[in-house]
Length: 428
Ligand SMILES: *[C@@H]1O[C@H](CO)[C@@H](O)[C@H](O)[C@H]1NC(C)=O
Ligand SMILES: *[C@@H]1O[C@H](CO)[C@@H](O)[C@H](O)[C@H]1NC(C)=O
Ligand SMILES: *[C@@H]1O[C@H](CO)[C@@H](O)[C@H](O)[C@H]1NC(C)=O
Ligand SMILES: *[C@@H]1O[C@H](CO)[C@@H](O)[C@H](O)[C@H]1NC(C)=O
Ligand SMILES: *[C@@H]1O[C@H](CO)[C@@H](O)[C@H](O)[C@H]1NC(C)=O
Image: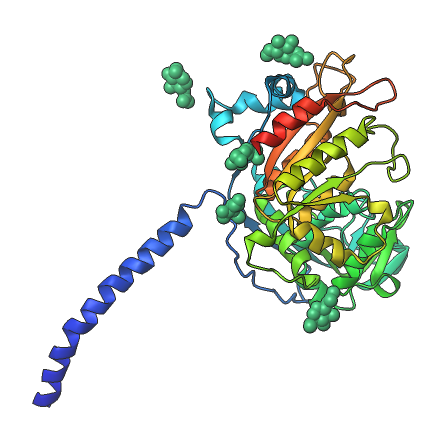
């Protein structure tokens, strides 16, 4: 006994010496996590097993507030233009002094920006409710009692009925953030139907992403139309989720990278793609926004790439017949992406943090309030502008963003000022 106690006395100081530094390492790790401005730490969300004896269950999580920085401008013309916009006028109201310039605009509305929820409803009934953060408490709990209250009843269904979710752009900006926190249930319930809004088309790229997620159109996708009353014995509703939060967008991007098996080369030097997203009369869904002096513009970009050992790529999505996974890889390796404001720019969702995005923002000089992309019927009624969606996305994705506002002619097309472009390229 005596001998043992003696050994313990010898070991104790050694143990103490070990524990103290370990405690410090632990403390500093903890603090460095706590002090990160944009908290994008992966938390493994526990997968709940829904207990069908319960009628309703909702998992919710509040994400931390976040900032969106103001765009970068290469000249005062661009800066003044933006500062005159309704977007800036609304949002800068909440910034004190120059805090908008320094930190960006703060997004901290619990319901609209932070609160992520997923609901599980036994015998749930869906009646064309808007799939978004405003989904009402009563509506989300709606159930059917008799089969004739529904036009169709599935055993299990998951709702992704965001507007135009069948289109590539709105799959990414509408369904993506909701998938990022509910994706695990696609695998957990492989027989669950996936409800999306029915549209004029169903973009091939969207179909392919669903398929990579294990959701085949033929067996699982339901194209919802407004007159359907969809019942499900287990209805899963991930709709009450902010449309914008960096965590959701980062997670969605990780998901696209992972399902397409791209090789994530750690070598930053290999990331040399300079991608010009081309808008042509044949590839655009809406008219206008064409660059009239495109050839000189392209020559300028090519010259810049040559000088900087970048790989110039001209991307026309209508000519891209390959599987979406190749496109995800192409944009994963982008260092610069440039283009006129258009849905095809949302391919930035596949590009890494730190990628530089240059958006040529078309506007009409004749409108008294700017930009044309958010012109209102009533100028007193300042609403957020959909025209800034790509700028916002770039910030959610932690990318570097430059805005180049450019005036359009009566047909909505433009001559890009090459000196301004040259000036911009010198600054990136
Ligand atoms: C925008 O604001 C600046 C000053 O902030 C002003 O000089 C200019 O006329 C305004 N309009 C446009 C179209 O830039
Ligand atoms: C704004 O600036 C004024 C004058 O420089 C200063 O007194 C005030 O404390 C500032 N407000 C904030 C919130 O920083
Ligand atoms: C990715 O890799 C997994 C496992 O090797 C494979 O099952 C899957 O088909 C691959 N997916 C694609 C899109 O290549
Ligand atoms: C944002 O991007 C920079 C590189 O541009 C990187 O160092 C940083 O870790 C990223 N932050 C997050 C939260 O992803
Ligand atoms: C503006 O550019 C700087 C320098 O490249 C970058 O650190 C910053 O994030 C950019 N701002 C935006 C809003 O992208």
